[in-house]
Structure formats: C-alpha cells, structure tokens
Length: 383
Ligand code: GLA
Image (cartoon, helix red, strand yellow):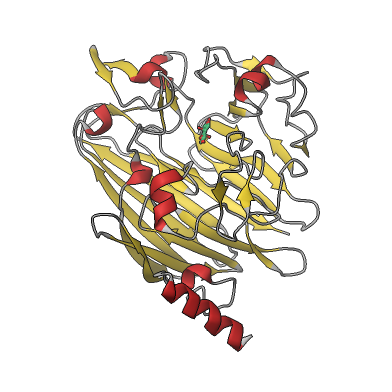
C-alpha cells in the first residue's frame, strides 16, 4: 500500500502533476476538513491552476481554479466504498482543449440563446456563437474557460470555497460588467450546496449553472441507462433541431419525457420520439412543477441500484436541463483512464429555461443594476 502510494506520487511528479490529483480516497488525500490547495498544472501562458481539496460528512470534493471545475466528487456506496461520481480529466491540458464542460461553472448564460441574439431595453445584442448558429453556455470563452479567484472558508461545521469571477462589459458580447461569486459548501452531512450571486452595472441577462456529469456507479464505469431518475415536472420545453425551445410547454404525460415517477433512464431512451431523435437522447429543459421558489425545493432524485448511491437535488430555479451524455463519443479519456462513450454520464443542470431572452412567456433572466442575482442548488447524497 505504502509502496503503491509512493509509486503513484513519483509517477505524478514525473508527469509534472500534483500528486493529490491521483488521490483515491484516503482522508489525507482529501486534505481533511480544511480546504487545501496544490498545483494542478499551468496554462500555456504560465498561469498556475490550482486544485482545492475539501471533505465533510463522507463527501470529498476537488475543485479547480479553472472554471470552478468539480474535478472529482467522491461519495460512499451502501458499504461505505467511495467512488468518484463525476466525470473529469487528470490534467489541465484536456480541460483547456477538449472538455465538454466537465464539472464546470457555466455563464454568463447557461444553455442556448437562439442565433446568439436578443433585444434588451430596445437594444439588440449579438453574443458569441459556438453551437451551430446558436450560442451555448456563454459562447466560445464562457465562465468555464477562465481562472477564478478561490478563497477557502470554514464556518461552524461547514467547509467550502468562495469563487469569484468578473466578466467585463462586452465580454462574449454581453452588456454590463458582471461580478460573480459562487460558493461551494460541504456540510457535516456531506451535502454539497452551490450559491450563485451576481451584480451588474448595466442591464444584462444571466443564467448560471453547474455542469457536473454524474455517474453514481463511478466515473468510467459505463452507461447510466440503469440509473433511476425522478423529476418533479409535468411539462418540458420541446425544441427545434438546434435545441432552441419552440416556446411550447408540452405535457410529459404519455411521452418518454415523463419522469414524474422514478424510472430507469434507459427505459424509454429509444422510444423514437421526434424530440429524442433530434437531441440524440434526452437534452431538454423540464419545467419544474414548483416554479421559482424563495428557497430550494426538491426537484429530482437519481439512484444507482447496484451501489445504492442516491443524489437528491433541490433548487429555487424554475428549470432543470436533463442531458443524457449524448455527445460523449469515445474520444475522451477520463480521470481513471477509461474512455467515455455516449450515455456514460448524465447532467442535471438547474437553471432558467433556454433562450429565455427571446421568449417573453418564459420567466425573465434579465438582471439590472441595483439588483442581486441570487440562486441556490443543494445536492444531497445517500446510499
Ligand atoms: C448541455 C447541452 C447539451 C450539450 C452539453 C455539452 O447539457 O444542453 O446539448 O451541449 O451541454 O456537451
């Protein structure tokens, strides 16, 4: 064991990596309760990217200063065995060059804006287009592709990180300098809470989210089709072929999109519904029954039957994008050395509806000077 550990560390050092990036779950590797940082790698211009390790209540989290990326999230199964349940890479180069948003913070506008265009207070804006003719996840250089300032904290029995990023007026075409603060908190029960806060100096649009790719059997362990999913939503937003909502809030009843009662993700994934064919699976926004709420309310439960691991999501947001990892195509090698194929993970992104700036009937995503954008999503784990 001791020998293996030393071998791993020597190997990591030879590869120019921080040894903790290869940690597999000892208390020391997670840095105990107080967040600690190590060098993860360097950007082409020499900027250092750090990896922060924190642990609490049985959950171990590793976060990069690059994009606020959750590089690893370990939780126990019903026998207490830890596994990293979040897809990622073991090196900064892959995060910079090829990540499909693994674990990242997404902004300024999570999800899509049709043609990257919208009008706000009578003024037209063209934002960065990076998904066919549309803008996805903030454009070519969204919040996931920047170094964030990270500040650790401990508060009572909580441990966490404050992540700061300032997006200047005009960045990616968006109006207003947006000051963003995201807080990751692990509580003594091992729950992971994300608090998002933002202010602006000009009217703008904001839709922040987190893009963790979940596989509760462990990253690299194969398909998520046997994961059972429940979403408290009677409607979803059908899209056009570019995955821009048509504006309709369609009923899930009688369709493969009905997850009101827990069912295996794979049960209806090949049902041949036109919406699934054009999205290559599930890649839609569910209209949460509870709507926008002052406090987070339970909206989804994911369960992996073999390990018994469960994830419960509560949010104050009105929508949940459920993406079944359709674009993973066997070209990326993950943290543990396995190749990721289609359906090897799924995302549950709490957010406002896609393309809201162009859909007057959708809840607004406009933020004005003097207002504070504030939202919270809580992830509770069990087994
Ligand atoms: C989101 C989108 C998907 C896809 C992924 C990243 O979940 O809805 O269509 O772009 O991000 O690959």
